[in-house]
Image (tube, rainbow, N blue to C red; front, top):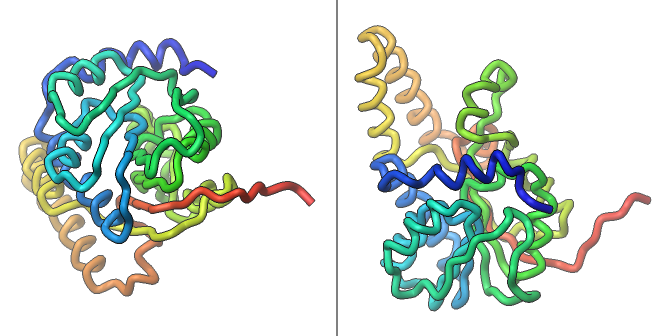
Length: 253
């Protein structure tokens, strides 16, 4: 199955500009989450599916916690940016159609897929390919859900988010495809990312509008810090999960 041609063209041009401060900050937080979930494992050969411009790859390359890195990306501009980085642990970067992965069964110790599944038209097809080629996986998705998410459709679609998840819904999707949940982390935005957003909003909003946004953001962080862990899956801002491939196949009875 090929990715939609119009979508392919859009992503081909998406990374033509140099890395932005936003991508840099986001990559730090995403790489940190991957490292934290990998600390009790020994992953040598690791693949990123949907590598974008290679920002996460660069962070993981600098940390040197994995032996070999590989990358798949659907966009020409993303691949070009990755190659410019000349990462010493990166063994190959290949273009793919968004679904069919050109590697053998169980070829990788771990595959990670960070902020990709919300963009995928047929997520189950991609998940099956990821499961086929890897023993372990790390996924991270933004938690865009709210009870009024339908009123924000234009906002999320503008970012290419065509799937909306909660931690429970994403875990259900993974379990239904035979992934075993090893460990999951629900989080709110990293402090540096949050400060970047606040600085941008200060320029965009009126004083009253910014004051209201700042109060809302501060309240979220305050509540989050005192919230027991068992309730943090209710409305985090991101969910990151370590999974393991199993032979389970769910069938209708």
